[in-house]
Length: 217
Image (tube, rainbow, N blue to C red; front, side, top):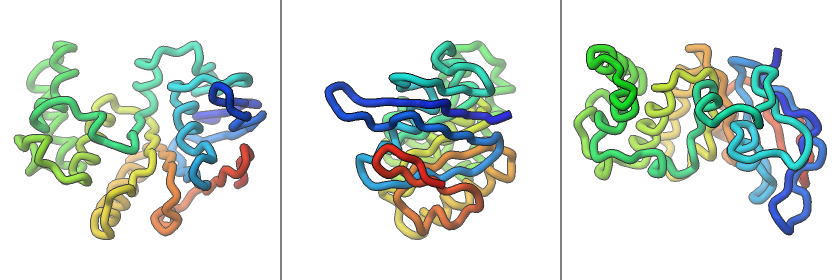
């Protein structure tokens, strides 16, 4: 069974020519997929269609054989996490610990469970030393890992990372590559939307290119 499946999907923004016209795509659970293509080719749009932020003009996007258009964003978010190009939009609290615990406390999860989960997550992402840090003072790469931590709290099976190497120097790209490999080793599936071919080549999996509304593998 495919984890994400596009069936004859067409999409366009209002008053624009079709961006996609009848595309088909299968993404397997636990797999790595890179989406490449020139600016304006629809890479980010494809990612947003995959998580239900955008709806197809025609055709279907299926998540574990369910039409994603009939699922709430909460349901989808429990299965797929999305990292936006700018991680700052996913950070809303003043400190790292407050940012990660806010939602769990609203859900009245036991404090002991929260503490254990946060510590495990921060250790996994190698940012345990930032636990009490002010989010305003974090570097771009640290904000990115915090945003990923916020995604992983929901324990999704799959992550979509939109242009994750933007703003990262060579050393921080190495750190990100190491994190992605840890996620893959942990059984997570990943879709990376990127024009950074050198970075994509760090991973084994399918590389798809979007050109003039068509996807080439």
